[in-house]
Image 1 (cartoon, rainbow, N blue to C red):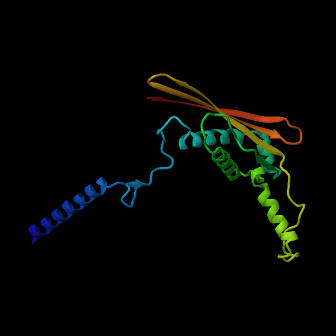
Image 2 (cartoon, rainbow, N blue to C red):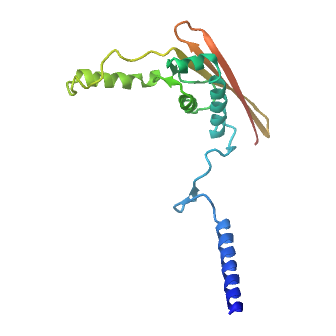
Length: 205
């Protein structure tokens, strides 16, 4: 009886180890369909090309946000519940990428730290259209629709740009990126804060 019990335990242990080994061989990323497409870690370092990628955007946004939230102006902005806005980051590089990804990421992180911001100029037309629809279309109950002339102006504006320098040889490509960001007081035009982030990417050709 004892030998039978011991054998059963041994077989159970062997089966458990086999299943664990099999699980370890399987990929942790689910594969979709037969195309081989799989999910990856969005925070993993991306080094596919020398062009700006997800890792660069994350590094730039994190560095700028950490620097900005430490400024006295932002601390006062939070305490007094004043507003900030962001102008689109200017792309001065020779490649195309959506700079709004950087701006949106920075604004999202700032809002998590208590900063309130208004919509930027690119979205202002949508805001104006909705106000007019509620006040002038005759489709809304006047007592329950929002009122014109109630929008709040921002005290500060974020302004920035990304530039690059590219150097090439027959077997090497070196790309240097620099992003500058500034916090400008809208009423006076004074730059109250500025910072920059540099990135260098090299690849063999």
